[in-house]
Length: 234
Length: 65
Image (cartoon, rainbow over all chains, first blue to last red; front, side, top):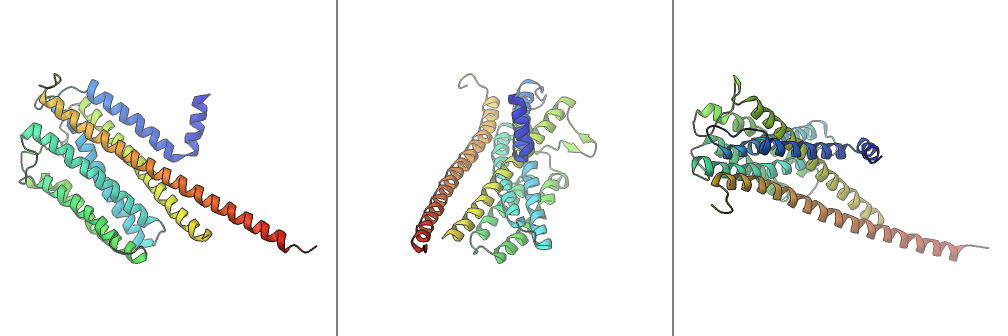
């Protein structure tokens, strides 16, 4: 009975479906990381940060990319709400970006003995991308709300999109040896169980980001409707 | 070793802990925002009810028999 009720409610609310999927996938990912996947022969137990750090970094790229796409849609089709969607996606990207930097530093310290290496182009380019989108909020909150602000922010978000492939491909182009390259043209350089765990972790992070994105977007829309109502009632 | 954990276990724990705390802080922020929205909707509903009461009163005063 409870299952049917929960099922009906999930069908009515797409956000609940995404949230339930995220909860399920996060639980599955944690179980696989700590109870299923074997320790890496080279790095040992600390390699388990990989299943957290890489999916978070990829999720940050996806969020920035989605933010740039919604900005493009705003400029191209003038779709109402696209500016807000772009802003929320970039906000999510900055949150996941800061988590990428923190988890990456922890992994670097245990693996390389350093919290940060300025000589690594992958690290520096990700920091540049993160700071670029961090500055987006300075721009947004220094301009009065309105169409001009939406246009300026959209153009800025689109410029940032250029940095995404550069940051992603930096390690392959730079040919440096410290930061590991796991995904090559020959496929993933890991065992089947490791790749399965990685895929589940990536799906978990993407669904978690989608949930947080929709929750924040709903909150922002509600806020805007409430402001409109307050003006009508006043 | 603290709590019998190796250095690698401590760093892995710290990485997963940071993400867990970040999600908790996010949920807390959303909860605070929801509480504010609920309060504001309540205030708005109260204002509408008061306005309706005043209008109903005025209608009674104006009524011509």
